[in-house]
Amino acid sequence: MNIWVDADACPRAVKDVIYRAARRTQVVTTLIANQMLLTPPSPFIKAIQVLSGMDVADAEIVLRLSAGDLVITADIPLASLVVEKGALALNPRGEWYTRENVHALLSMRNFMQALRDSGAQTGGPAALSARDVQNFANALDAWLAKNI
Image (cartoon, rainbow, N blue to C red):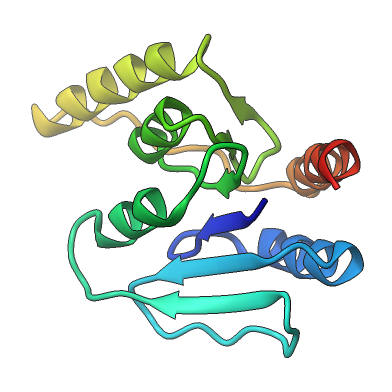
């Protein structure tokens, strides 16, 4: 069992929660990004830099993950691929992507993208709050307690 982090857009506060959890539980956690990442020294925390390009980090995560692994991402298309592969996906706000909800979330994301592409101003997601980070920490801790 491993934890994979789609690290390019992962908020710093969420990464800090992930680092503490990896050290505490000794679960191998790998951050994958298009840019160089500085991670705390730990045999349980790794960073992989991939080439720049659209969805290169996502493809690397999907290639490396196994059923039962956990992927942390806000990227709904990646979450859909993760769920199809039998792994679990959690977003930085502590919300799970599941077989039951990921297709609806993907459809809504694609609809909103089409609106933006046509010139509509749709706004973005709300800023990550302290409550969101706490929800993420609680969801991660619950998953770890169940799986280690």
